[in-house]
Length: 398
Image 1 (cartoon, helix red, strand yellow):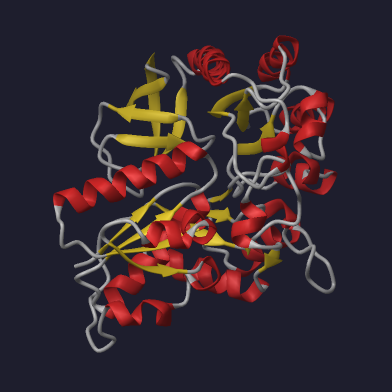
Image 2 (cartoon, rainbow, N blue to C red):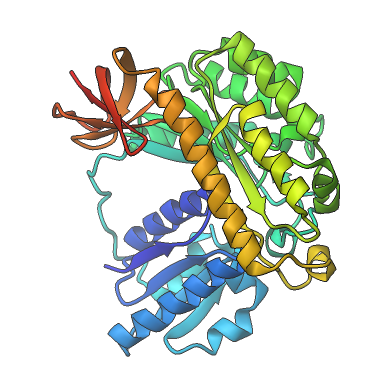
């Protein structure tokens, strides 16, 4: 059976699940499909390395590429050994695009493998022009999926055995702004929960802080089915750098919004995307980002050294030395690890509610990692006694 290799974000992971189903339904055997990412130069470097590795391992391999890197530079990737086809981002979720690589008459039964967490795509593309980002080039302007199509996706995911659903997209907090009449992310959350009463666990992927309004704050605070983990696309804690990035929020807005949410729902854990070493970032600007981790109660961080992307305005700005960007990213990861450890220590001696992912691994409702000393059943919920913390993981037992 052919396989799908995924690079990149949660949206890519969601799309790769759909493509994997196409592979089964079309009976694709002789091709490997790679869903690519172009968010950083490092992501593309790893992609090229993987293509070369696969070809060296099997000189007869047939690789079909889709996703953002393939969209940005299709001719380059088609020139690489082993790559025989490109599927455009615009049609990557059309089953017919993959039919030439398999046989429609050939069908494969769905896997009975228990999957705990499913992804539901509610929008694609982006209307904003962040100066470091190539998403508009690879995915185009924002467009929102129809509300009933989203409900249908969610119901199908639950039928497959998923116990928890994650709303995903390029910028889910812009949902509904292109529809007529306009709606918003709060609307689709409420619509889903109203129309699928059996959906008891719903998560949000990354939110743009500029779009977290009072309605969404109240929804996060009052809706128990909405899991208490908020991941924000913050990128920097310095207001000048945020302006040069083309972001629409300020460090003060992050602090105020997160404080409001915590006041109303104290169990919320905040995560964030942060870019270290953005062009023109001084030591003082970097220190402002470090301070924001504490002031904004940020503990689950995705930190990336700035990556110069051709064709973006940021690529023309005065660059920070790569070794400085890398060092700053390391410092931010260490800071976040310390903050997270302090938070985790408060759970010792208490019970934590978890959703089991495997026989021993689980996540709390606020998306903290758990290792159970008692055997668990994937997809079931438990209350575990927190015994201790090891490597920023809760060690618990029934």
